[in-house]
Amino acid sequence: MGKIAIHGFGRIGRSAMKAALKRGLFVPASISDIKDLPTLAALFEVDSNYGRWPQPVSAEGSTMIVGDDKIPYFETSQSLPDWGALGVELVIDCTGRATRRAGAQAHLDRGAKRVLVSAASKSREDADAFLLPGINLDQYDPDKHFIVSMASCTTNALAPVVKVLLENVGLKSGLFTTVHAYTNTQSLTDQPMGDRRDSWAAAENIIPSSSGAAKALKFIWPDLNMTGKAYRVPVRTGSIVEATVVTDRATSAEELNDMFRKAATSAPLQGVMSVLEGEWASSRIVGDEHSSIIDLPLTQVMGGTLVTVAAWYDNEMGYSTRLADTAAFLVK
Image 1 (cartoon, rainbow, N blue to C red):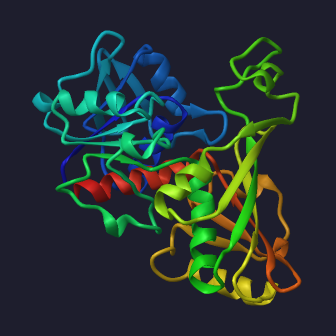
Image 2 (image 1 turned 180 degrees about the vertical axis):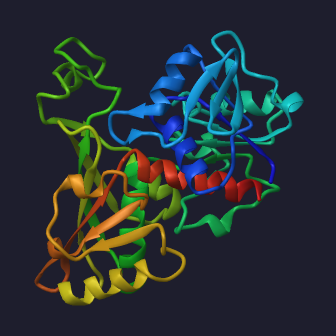
């Protein structure tokens, strides 16, 4: 397998590395960030959401040691590493700064063969392909796709719902709402922010926000007629998205739930989507590695064609696990 580097060692970068190590997918050829390595190693070892890593973790000089694995670290406040000299085939960019083509292209200019962007690129032109596990990875073309966007955690949660509906009952139009955990883009205390609604304390408010998932979904299904919004709420991780759609043909909650059960246990969504039969709250899915977890008791149908489906997702670990899976797939 080709060498994979993780650039940006924040919430998603650290979680992606944990997923890669836990699942035996790869050991990063390097990690890089603008912060000091001892602090990053400590944050990797003890996580507020997921607890303590089961192996010893330490920092020695410019090396992070996790169990028996020694991973080089590069401080990148001045420049990117020479990926070509390091033999890196794929850079997973988790900084949030590669959503424009120029930001992702910088890795290619430094010798990387491909870039996997852990966010939704701003436009269709800012990435060569938008690829989601379980949805359209079979469209990957190694001769054309050098900058790949995996869109957002919400897109990955909603896409399996859209796929099952499109393929079984059709989808005329729809709206979605995601109730999402707070993130680092928000403020801990009240203070002026670029987005006015984000100016209020994240852990004390329900904060309406936009969602880029609708645009990202249209990169995959150009004719999809769906839009939506988000509400940020005071939980540290664990989110839920609810899609309300008008279907092409009449259906029932029982039929839909059987469709989701079947899809969750067969390719291509097996391992990407799962279902919940019981009645649960968000703590149930913290740490769950699936992208989309359908809450079957919440499925409702009115008049045969007005449908609502709810899908839970750990917006950090679920997404990061798919990121690790996709990175391994791209260099396989």
